[in-house]
Image (cartoon, rainbow, N blue to C red; front, top):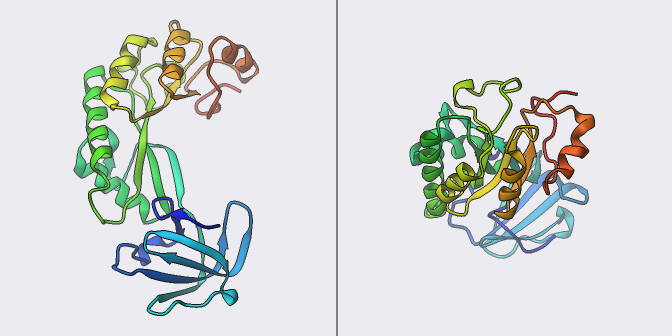
Length: 254
């Protein structure tokens, strides 16, 4: 496994005990084990040069380069950073605040537990409030790499609501739930400035099919959620639009 950017790093589970922003050209991490996409390596070495993971393998087969720093963590497991595709907030802050301070606090907090990237997830609110939050998140995304502070990266925006079933709304406020609207979705996408990634929608609602098609045309992954559609009818709902099915069991009927 070579040439892996630090932007999607292999982190220790207790990441808060390690600093990746120190000025160090070469680091050799010695972990009790390392998990890669294809294998588990015991007594592992992870060689990092500048901002790239150059090699992962048994520590016994690696030599510490001259001038390099070895970090011994033989009682820990190194794993690829976790990705959270559905997160409303952390550390006492909500992504709907849409402020740099709130989003920095959220991404700092989740990074302490090994999460290196998230998709900021909205909660059903008024159209104007959602637009303000999405605009703020999009601004943060555009500027988030202008710092060396260790924190998770926001990969994009997940729209959860307002196009959901009132019967299966969970904690979403019922007063702001509305029928799917391709026009409203278009406003959300414009506010997202290219950062929209996922739309959660109840496909049985009037207007869902054109809204789903608009989302797919914009490159979003469409998630069926907060829906009264029984699981056995998923294939029909999927055929009714061009959408793939993602996260189908969130607040759903079985």
